[in-house]
Image (tube, rainbow, N blue to C red):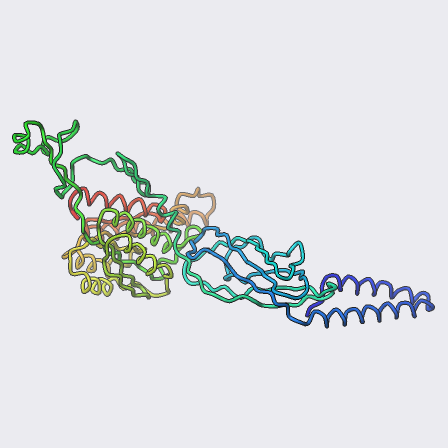
Length: 435
């Protein structure tokens, strides 16, 4: 039991009245009577409020939480029996989440046999498993002089996934054009790598697509229609080391890489390709390549709780493990954050991968470094910062240029550019028939 605001105000008023007996002793008896009455009232009200009320609380929330998105939650309060209750409710949501609408004080007493529902908003900033505590109630005593703290409801653990709705917002399909992750690609009718069907010749078809035997048989121009080759394997090699903890905004490089991976996985499964992933750099997980929408669901379940670690990336060990697991020729997509000192370990890794697979190395470049270089120089410290940034960038570009010789596909982009660059590169390879 804790004193309420009403009780504190009464005690303060009684203390102020205590000045009167000091000035006029004949008022001491009256002040003592008031103090005794307040103490008696406090005691009676406290005893009446000791009995725990039969109130229950149920929490309702979305089954799947999305990172960085506001979600509406509801609490249902029900009173089975007893006296009407005036109370305040606070739900112990996971630490670090943004909240609006709590604590909530009921405007009217909760009546026996009735229930009430209140809502509030939560925004999870990080992926992974997060724990809700029990709900805390502050129940006023019958005369409102005390408040009783009572915990009810149940604790639970929820899962926060990457915001897949925002990722899919980058994939917009139209009839004659396809825009994915900022990539605008115009379909070329009838072109591809796998034969699909025969159809009548249409204006704009290449003369190379005309099937002359069918044309002679049907006495009208007939074209061969091709489609992009399907049933390929895409395996993501995801770096979970300390490099990926770098941040240019409120999200880490690892979060950007994860979003780009999911966008490319969604695009690939729409093309009929299989999707797999291997994580390294402190966390080792292997999801074998799988086709269809179920592959996306499995991928989300397998990577939603990943966070970058403090480990140092071992590219050669990761390459050896992937080569053991991936026997079929695949498109290997390495997502990492490279430094110039990585050349000695990454170069042999890329060479091993390219002997059997088609490899794309995508490195995330720090936006903060670009901004420091582009910033106007007005002080000596600024000049030193600019020179140091230029020297680092030059050494990095030279190392990446040498690494680019080891693989046919290489990307060095900012985290914000990565989704579009990955999808663009994948579609280019599909169209060229290299996959």
